[in-house]
Image 1: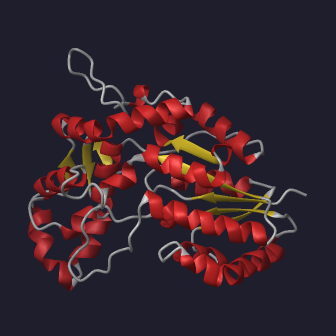
Image 2 (image 1 turned 180 degrees about the horizontal axis):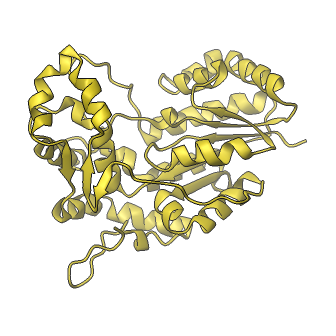
Length: 321
């Protein structure tokens, strides 16, 4: 019996909720572990926050817990773990006094997966496969900012979002701290070099919204199970209009009650929305243009139709939404 371990690493903001709620629970060949819902999946997600050496020192113990929970849940020999915390990097600045979410970058992630795979195969898994979601970088930054990036704002939110975004794509400022994480081509190459390209699936979230049948077909082939009756239910709840993003009211109320965040109430009063201007989109996508083109060629996926190349019509209309 084939023993496969599939790890869905995120990125966050790339349709993870759809996969975690609609797709993965219906699988029959895999024991499904969602995020940190069990001691085993919590240990695994947490381990990626530390040095890759953790797998050499503690890997057998971590995997023994996983195998024990697999035995409790089902007799199947394969497992799927979905935890975007494995690849979660706080791209925007964190509020003063808030611990950072540990260093992450594609090179460190690949080093983790190499050690992780060694342990997985030693304890009896025949193969390790990786599912990785991507999202166009300008849209990713806007979505991530209104989720939690605004918490550290010390200027009008629009100004803060634009300033940080420009710093993130600047090689002389934060690109090699934060921006490198959105270089999907590099991440694809590094992970593929560890598990093999046939064991790595890259899923653009734009495909989920525009070509769901192809999206689910690719996923079905990769997993080795039919996925029946699935339709995209993805809703961009924070994007209230093209390129206009709103911070959730519930998040604003929650933060406003906390003493340490009192200083940003005035910022929120100015308006809890940001606008992703055409000029800023051009600059962000220019920083990733070559990488996105190379990724599209490697995956044989038309990322241009989703605007990954920063393409404009002559009349200035944006391609890709």
